[in-house]
Length: 433
Image (cartoon, rainbow, N blue to C red):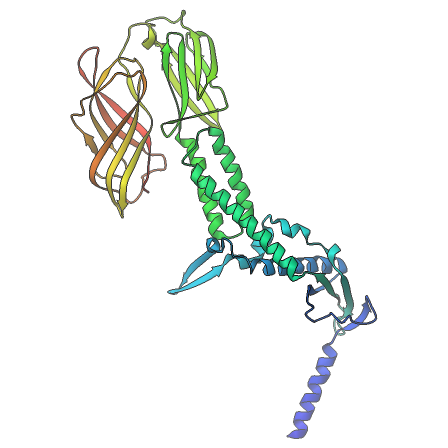
């Protein structure tokens, strides 16, 4: 039995010796002392490759990943922002996104740009050949300086940069509620795209993606409206969810009858001048106003008959977006809905508002206001605010991405004294899903 075991051991030693590759070339006569050891203040990296060029590339990649791991593992700032929890078969597993080296390496981090093979202090390589297959390869080792002081410096830079990026995101998140200019939307989207190139974790990337979508959706909330100042002058402006915003492009204005048309900026609005001498009273005369913002065309038609060309007429038109804001939402229950409706009193004559009926797609019952008895004398844009008190049941989701609120408004015509009903069909936004 002992003889048998001795033969087995001898055979294994022979096989092991035969499997060792043959060194056919090396960069130095002696193997340096730093090989396969831990040297304080240095990274020792060894890679295997088919050529020296490939070995250099692999060595640089390994150095980069080792430095990333060293720096990222010591980062504390904003670490809570990149922790994700995944439920696997009832167990919660935590994953620290800073350990995802490949994602960090692809981020635009300044300290990664200083990593170079030109910093390597010593190199040692061996060219070896497999005795059985005759295939050759290189074992390539480098001694790269990386002190604890350098590690602490890079960690501090990383933390400062990360905090700066998080602060910028929070700033843009707050700013979406305070837009004063359409140009600010485009600028915010550009800055968010830059943040998406930096954030290397799924949590914050998802947040940036969501905020970018919200900014892009603002373009859908833009409307163009206006009012007559006097005969020959019309004032128009762009609204974002019913509030005025500045634009840097001038509107294009045409007419079926008016001439000498010009538009000039005035604060947050534009003043349009025109000559209506050639407009016939028996025809429908108008200014057609259009403006293109980031590919979205805004249009508005101003009827000239209401300012002296032809007989005066009663005209109050609902326009823009209907804004619905609930005081609270629990499951599918909505409580107390605040309503903001934009009316355009084109004729400028006083009118009475009797009632309002709204059919919101995701609310099962209509919202009805009876006996309002409001009197409005302002010409042009009028904001109607109302509160529908009580509890409403919401459907699971909107029937379409661009659905409309349908309804009826009942006015008192000041010209005839008669009660008139006007149909309403407006896009809308809510503060619930």
